[in-house]
Length: 285
Ligand SMILES: CC/C=C\C/C=C\C/C=C\CC/C=C/CC(=O)SCCNC(=O)CCNC(=O)[C@H](O)C(C)(C)COP(=O)(O)OP(=O)(O)OC[C@H]1O[C@@H](n2cnc3c(N)ncnc32)[C@H](O)[C@@H]1OP(=O)(O)O
Image (cartoon, helix red, strand yellow):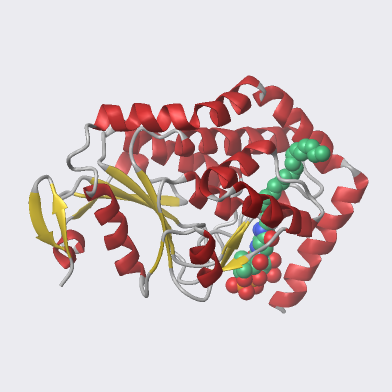
């Protein structure tokens, strides 16, 4: 039986998950749910915008609120996962970008920036239990965490070029923080979606497991590996390593929104997004 060291105590892993969760009500919005494991202090943040967890403005706002509450509660770890059995997140909700309301489009991108800054820079250790497909924005969220566990037979990657769009610099930095530069470059230009096995091989994910429960246990074990590490020293080290990536966006936040708005509004980009949305809908019929 697997076990983990939590607060200096050896605990059987099934004990870590059973009967010890309480909801963090302030952090649970309509589209996210946060539960804290009272035994370990780890928070499970579940995206719950079914069917595909498309990241629209509302989900992004709920995600930000949840991450901030988890930080405020000084949780020992944050596990990001999905309420769906097959999709971690389909990435950005394309309907936010196709024929958009201009003011909402700005708020949408601003919300994505804020979620990324909060998650990538989180003082609380972060892990993703990737229990389904994770394209584009879904991959961004997972790659912003410090550790990733994925279930088999799904796909993950930054597929923007396949949609005729260009991933912003901070998407690319996040990828480069996880992958060797050459692999990141090849994958980004191709818009490659990795299978779970391929993702493990290149290091885009750290482990493959058979079930969501196992994924949560692996994430708990990852956090337990810090039991002898000073939390402040841990955070300051992470912060320094990620500083340049975050500073680059913080310094250019307004310009980045303008770039996004102008890029998305280009007729050729609108056309690509329209075709893509149509192809997704046809597939669903
Ligand atoms: C020079 C440049 C300078 C500066 C650049 C500045 C800015 C950069 C600009 C832009 C960058 C924008 C970045 C975007 C990143 C993204 O995240 S884009 C989104 C990418 N996502 C995808 O490609 C995923 C698409 N979806 C799928 O592949 C499948 O749906 C998925 C595998 C997730 C699930 O498959 P399945 O279970 O079979 O479900 P369905 O395909 O049947 O889907 C169910 C319904 O959900 C709708 N849907 C799916 N994904 C999305 C989505 N991302 N957005 C909106 N809607 C989506 C799908 O149409 C179905 O809807 P229906 O039931 O038919 O109504």
